[in-house]
Length: 174
Image 1 (cartoon, one colour):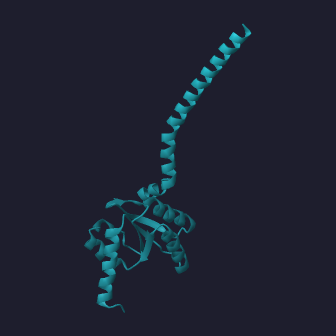
Image 2 (cartoon, helix red, strand yellow):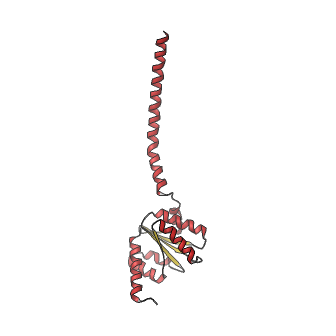
Image 3 (cartoon, rainbow, N blue to C red):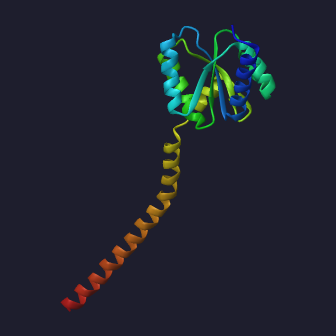
C-alpha cells in the first residue's frame, strides 16, 4: 500500500508534468501488455516524450490542480498520459503509428498549448509532415524565385554573347 505522502508526491509530479508540457495526450491502453507499453515508451522517449500509467483518480486530482479540468472526463478505464514539451507533431505521429500497429491503443484526446484537442484533431496533427520537411519546403519556396532569376539572367547573358558572336562573324566575313 502506498503512503499518503507518496501519493501526494506522485500527484505533484503529475501536476508538474502537465504544467511543463506543450502537448498532453490521453490514451486508452486496454489490451496492451507490459512489453508493448515499454516498446511504446521507448519510441516516445526518442521524441523527448514521457508516457505514464497512473490511477485515474490521481490524474483527475492533478488535472484539477494544474488547471487542466477539461481533461478530467477522459480518465475512464485504463488510461495513460503522454507528456511532451518538444515537437508535438512527432509525438502525435508516433502514437498514431503505434495505434495502427497495435489496435489496442486508442487516443482519447489531449491538449496542445492549453487548448483541448479531440481524437480527430490529434490525428490531423499527426499527419503534418515532420519539422525538417516543412523547413525544406520553406527554403525551397525561397530558393525557387532566386533560381528563376538566375536562369533568366543567364539566358539574357547567353543571348548577348550569341549576338556579339554573330556580329563578330559578320564583320570577319565582310
